[in-house]
Amino acid sequence: MKPILMTLGDPCGIGPEIVAKTWVREPVCAQQCCVVGDADVMARAVALSSETAHLRVQVLSALSDWKPAAADTLCVWQIAEKRQGHATYGPYGQVSAGAGRLAGDAVVAATRAALDGQARALVTAPLNKEALHAAGAPYDQYPGHTELLQDEAAKHAAVPPAQMPVRMMLANPELRTVLVTIHMSLRQALDAITTSSVFETLRITHQALLPILGRSPRMAVAGVNPHAGEGGLFGNEEQTVLIPAIEQAQALGMQALGPYAPDTVFMRARHTSEHPGEFDVVLAMYHDQGLIPVKYLGVEQGVNVTLGLPLIRTSPDHGTAFDIAGRGIADPSSLQQALRMAVQLADARDARG
Picture 1 (tube, rainbow, N blue to C red):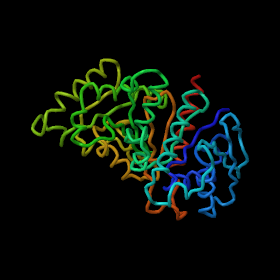
Picture 2: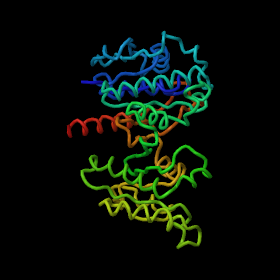
Picture 3: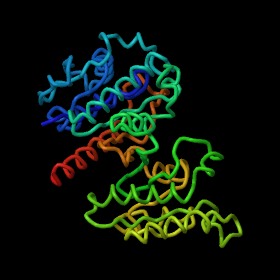
Picture 4: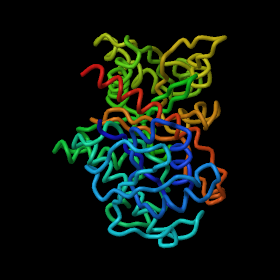
């Protein structure tokens, strides 16, 4: 069996700590997972909590050395040139260029291994965008994980990044949302919401959810404007941009629906035991429109899934939490959910052959 790779995230944030806690709480880790990063950083994180203090950090110089381990053994693929103590990257809770570089290097190493078929899936702990930029080239050109993953996948396929379109899906047990635009200003996002970008999001979402659901997903498109434009009174993007994209998707047999008023469509899609959702997923036009409702339902349950990549990648839906880093109190629930989702997706892919 090939491992599921878990990057350690920013060494100055809560990433290493929640990785260690997830290792203890999820038995699948010792049997199926390998941490990518620096063993000394993980040893420092293990010592933060009595829950994880019993873990023994095992260092792997090559991923090919990985094999299922005992429950008390945390395997680390050492990708730094040499083992370095946490002090090398700066204190907990502060932006550090060295920490940003290690976090970026871990993502690149894990992504390339997954693209080469050496891993079943990739689960990434949070990195800090400011630290990533402080690390300099090549990481200062990426707003975050998603764009870095896209670029690596495009290089592997020998195509321009534009020919490797990806989308961010945030999901919890009650709601899924996929973003048409991701890390850009709201002003830039409005220009990026085009018929082609909305249609491409529908196509990617349909293709990703079809094998998970076993049927065509019901995709609700959120409007750009208040009340979905109110028939053009508050903007005409619904008529000129969204409806043509929806019609294109429908012509190909997809269940694309809307556009719907953004202030109610997420409530309509929310699935609970008392209220089955009307839709399987909502397409949000920009970052905060889609992420606020998912995170409001509970950050600890949210999972970020990157759609459109030739690999499985999930992550928690929170950041590095510098304000509590190093205190041993970080909640690993979202990372646990991300790992479970990665296992589910990998198992489903393996079952399809």
